[in-house]
Image (cartoon, rainbow, N blue to C red; front, top):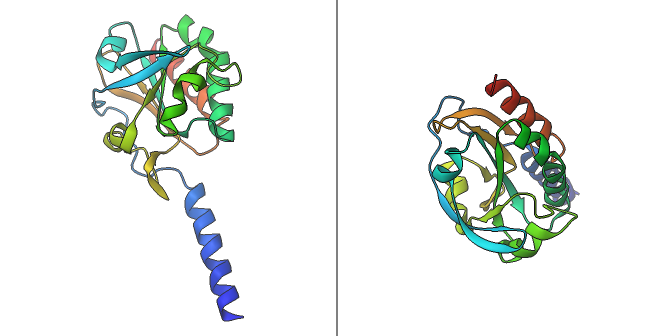
Length: 181
């Protein structure tokens, strides 16, 4: 009986810990770490460079745990539907993941996910996520679900860390809309 209670307690603690957002996300006003990464747009490979993207306007950098998982597919699809609204505000979007990076070419072009509307970058070993304090608590080799708006000057103007994939697009659109006024 004691073993059953201990196992149940551990399971509950693990579930709570997994549900918690990252607590160490970069703060607003912080200089965003520059990065380059192998990426895909509509299935085509290229090298994404944050510095180049910032020359065109604010950039939403959203970290997600792994390509082709239920929550990440939903989040990518929601971002793809909102791309015209981001573009109207002068912003671009890049998804970054450390999980299932070998699937990113397909993920970037699938109409159920990115639909070829924005790029996704591979972050093997979560090196970029680590610099952005966006590591998944129970799986440090994967990125957490954390989104940033980076100003053209390279500073963080908004951050949203929440494992619920349905909340990021609105938070980032609101932040970009506020930041461009």
